[in-house]
Length: 211
Image 1 (cartoon, rainbow, N blue to C red):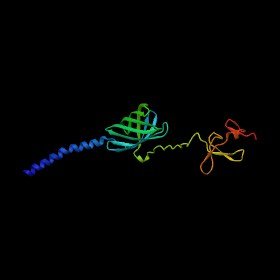
Image 2: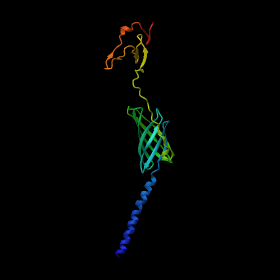
Image 3: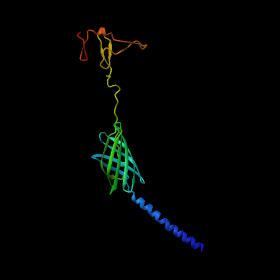
């Protein structure tokens, strides 16, 4: 009797647990596979995006060309066929966030976007996208822009010319005859005697010696 009762309980437990497993399988089947490389069209601006998927959670990066090449990080989620993405980037020193809300259908995304930045500018419009391939290694971010910073835009390289007394004077910038000159080895400075340069005629920044 006890053995028969135990067998009935085991059968009931198996039957009751079967729908739960079926529901999990159905839920997993409802999540679309978005992992791969995508191309998005945001109101005429083309954006390349890589998506890494962890169940319903999404992460990745995207890059664009307007107005200068930029890269952004991306995070988001997918629930059923509803897709929500957020991107954050630094474009020309300005923080830019893009919020994307769309619907996945037949391997593509259709929806809308809202773009805001740290200056208070806002733009919105329609968005479409399609997956170009499942291989995430095919994604290529924009190359970094390296700009050389000038040491001083108002300073010219030091040049030298021979003075009337045979000594070599140093010129820097546009102040001819006004730059301090090095003195003795003790680090003392001496200045050019302006009166000794009276014979020179300065015209439009050029020194002309009539002799």
